[in-house]
Length: 165
View 1: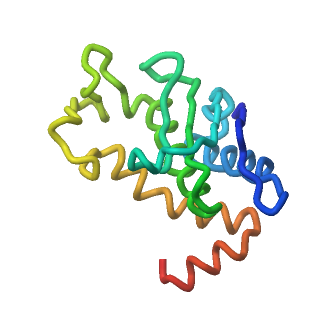
View 2: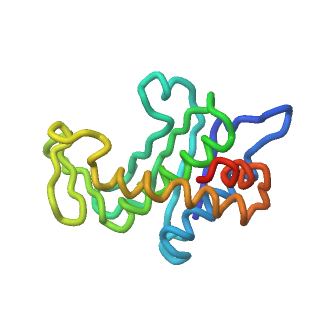
């Protein structure tokens, strides 16, 4: 997977670029497999103010609404590292959904999406009832925990064990 990063946060002078690069690649391969992941380009931007809009991140396709291959993910950098890594996992689930054709924006109307062949009007559903969000929220924590084990981030995985998550 090709990745570009902008404004990656550093904490105590330590850049987290290598960690986020590894996480994006690992999430991509776990969700899409190597073959599809190798054909995906993701620009990941760390920004401020998304929390003010009620979200920790977002994902948009940049090239085509039918099985796109180019995406931009924005992550609110005012959060802590575990939250940002979990948000990246969540947004990578959306990359997978778009890239595999599971989720499509319907161009004729901003509020219409197609999920696994069925049309959904997002103005008539609550956010938590969108099927693509149910999948993304359902997978984000498991992906994050498995990545922490893979990357040897013992503090993050021990925090999860202590909370019983």
